[in-house]
Image (tube, rainbow, N blue to C red; front, side, top):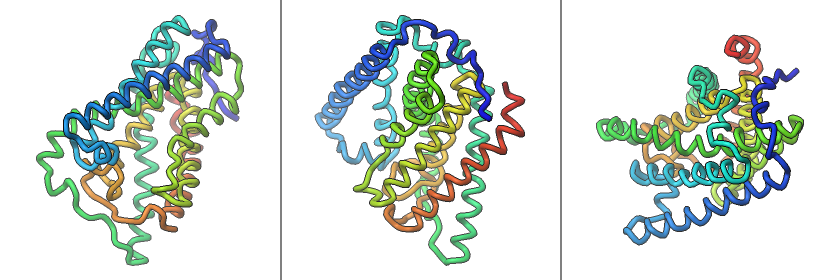
Length: 298
């Protein structure tokens, strides 16, 4: 049974008509589209290689890519103020503030998943003789340390933009209208997953990547509904991206700040297997976590 904190969206009792939600979403994406096009045009004009920025191939490029999500914050602030007649902070939860204790809880939850996943990966590498990680930014540790704090701030902008749209704006407004879990959590999470669909990079694994991100999105929604605040979802998302961007990365995949790289074809069966195992781990550990730990955080 899914436990829901009904205070999460009780403060959003008006200005949630369907036309407002649709218009709001369109406005956010129009603002983002115009701004991001201008942003990358400006980068090209200044001599940056936009392709390398999108790939996050260096600390500078990765920082620019993460900062490119800031227009979503602007769009959300405008949409909430003009269309829904409320401040942006309303999307954090009924307290209008982020619960940082929940943020830590969410980060620990995700680190637990990644730790188990990494142990299984290392066992597989040892048994099969598959090459493991190679040095990347660990060879430039001083530069990595200097970049870590500002990069973490930029990462908060990136993950915050996604969480505010999917676990803030959509989840809250749909719940405030009386929408059930399917419409409030599953459908937005599937859209979240589709946003990561990239068959050119992943081949058949693009479908498994959509599955992976959809399941993660549903868990983020359920955690948010359970705790009544966006803090835990932000913590989960931050820990997930921080560990993959800053610690153990994949060569050619936003690895400009990763201490170590894993050089592997993203279309390989090993990636398929790793995504399936990761999805199973997320579901199992989420169920254990909610029974043993999350209850004490409400």
